[in-house]
Image (cartoon, rainbow, N blue to C red; front, side, top):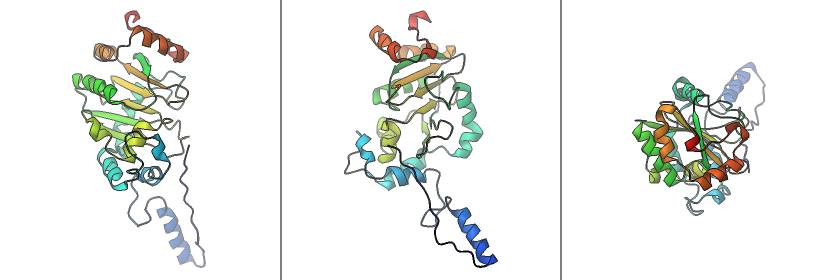
Length: 257
């Protein structure tokens, strides 16, 4: 289910040059101000769209009765939203070092040359136990942040997208405490994400829960022991993953690396 947010402008009638100027100003302001006249925030569309009834069907962490609390969701996004300016100026270049073929997504190879790749069953951004293992890794290499950037597939995604900057040590209750904002981020099955830290030595691609329900972890050789040991799969899991992993990844068991 994909919701598209559209804005319509009605009742603008040009009868003089002065009114033309005023109308032009009003048109420029559409999309930058809310209906209350306050400046629009980058995440306003997330609040407008995902607070609606119907989206709670995806959630296991927010009940239907609690769904739609805009104040909780907005406070959450205010704390952890990554601004477009900071992203473009500082962190997009790190993302581009780690990931390639970003607009294509799977089944193309997502990780740049030089990264070892290990896949596991996935389909959602994080589950509690997997986040804890990832945080053990980020603590071991002294990462301060976890960046979560939704894949727009070259701006082809039409619904509101997430761009987040979390403290690397964020607890599960805090991560899931944003009402519908955290539920959509963590549980919406068709969303795909790039996850990485400031060092650029590792990354995780979260594919959707339909065609390729996979988490694909990539890491540089200098941190391979840290990540490889904590995300080691059993032989049965390796065999299962090998059946669905795209050919570009030519899956290898840890002892074959």
